[in-house]
Length: 344
Ligand code: 5AD
Ligand code: FES
Image 1 (cartoon, protein in one colour):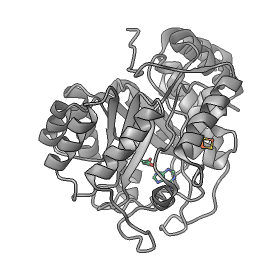
Image 2: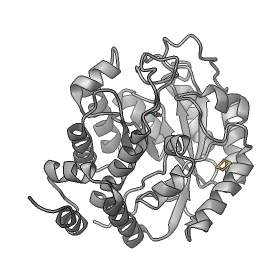
Image 3: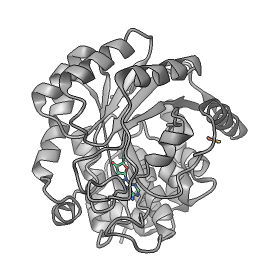
Image 4: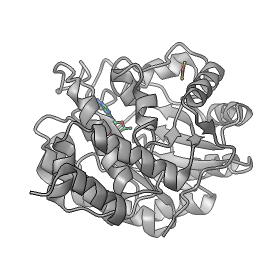
């Protein structure tokens, strides 16, 4: 049996591991894994941290993902959608706060047809910012139109590569279609982001290893990993399992070890279940943070999971707070747009 240390050395040198070797890393306590991930991050990307200003512009969603508080079946959710002008107002605030990237995220809300979305994209791209979209599954033609309008990046988490679990978690959705969307996004020249949830009911360590191998095969530019946090108004309304944090951190660190130069956020979900979660993540392979730039009235309503951080903080306060935290660990906020610098 090859020792943990040998697996880490092999992963560090070759940027490739077998499924069994990844499983061994995920079954370890994670300490050495996180150290290797931090070392890899420093070597390939230095101490720069990229900030992305997040605008969650609609919480209306046609999907009914079992874990998500915004699922269409949740009648307790207080729904909102921002008109294009309001979205652009927040983008302006983000630019003024110094964000070099804005991320537009929403539920799958058909109100924003492709013409509306392309208009918003074109308006945003009049400013000197990179633009990431995180608005779900679209047709290839729609992805193409948004790319031509100027969008730079697209986030679409696969959520889990365990097909059976995927089908259970996502009623009326298709795993194959999700994979196809990701390959379409990639083919169209977007910087492509994916990721998974960690700690879903019945999710195995084996399937998390498969998730990591999937990200590598996709050759993703960005990977976001978050712990599953149960929402009381969903079918998965169990107690929070605090171990989801440790496993999410290990999955993230293993992604860094094997994908040394990609962008990896310290996710908000990590900080939601651990008061120092984003800093721990930044010290375990992450190099990106995505603070919210909306006002409280909307942040409160974008309740994917409960107890989200910074609900009452003004966007300017979060911008300063996160910069101070980043500096406190000897890192600094990047002044660039933070595109994926491939070392291949
Ligand atoms: N806990 C943690 N993350 C969640 N997401 C959705 N619901 C939850 C939850 N209950 C994540 C999904 C989605 C992203 C926007 O939020 O991975 O892709
Ligand atoms: Fe919002 Fe610290 S990031 S208050």
